[in-house]
Image (cartoon, rainbow over the protein chains, first blue to last red):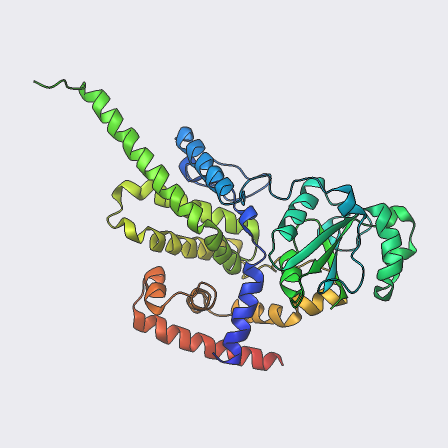
Length: 202
Length: 180
């Protein structure tokens, strides 16, 4: 494979990898023609609704059997307070990254000046925790992130200079020993609710 | 003399059985391949919403035609072709070649370095190629399909696939060199 082919494969994989099993919706094939997505989307001419429901149920059950990859439960488990309070001490595990979540003060236009929703946060937590290359995921609340940023993210600029209310929720992700963080970064960047990703320890 | 269903009932039962067969078979296919096909549509059209619609419509088409499908072993080939056609139609309807992928408009220096301008450059170049060349490259380098499978999906001969891919990769290489 020459350099062009390698670059092409890498770029396509990076983009394709932004979709995960949890992004696959229930099938709508038995509902009739799929209307092109406009405001709110939806379907026209519903027919064979029973078949559609059966199909959706079959996929949901299959997903659950395969580890719930299509179910709403994935990643929705509450984060323990122990986990929430924890920040990995430097020196344990592999690389550490911080996934900064959207906040009203985020300058990233994709955040639309809104805080990350609970559903988005839980989906991200599930996605991170289910990865084999991740050793640990800690949730850092807005209140905790102010102190955390002051201590560990100083080199990235003035995140922590504003009032506590301007801080954002974050996930601190510790990779397994000997594993790079690139895969995780590519997987979360651009996902709903993600502002940016920083490498704390490479 | 055996008991017989009234003609209407028998016909109804047969229609139900056919619908049940189509539902379970297409659902099975969806379960196994929807994610891969959504990824394929995503790299072709550039946004998740359209990619999802394209895949749903492809499966809806398969479901509608299920009873008339001669070779059900080739159902995946059919649905993959439908995804490619649907992507092409979506791009044409949009009347602009390509929309940026899921990239936050403002990258931090770190994030930009990781996802990379390099990849965005490759994708921009890919989407400047003619549709058939782009499709051939995506099927080969993203879906890892053989020449024969690509020929099936694109409904062309193996020879055409070979020559299309060779022209496409050369053109892509030239575009990327020019960018540097």
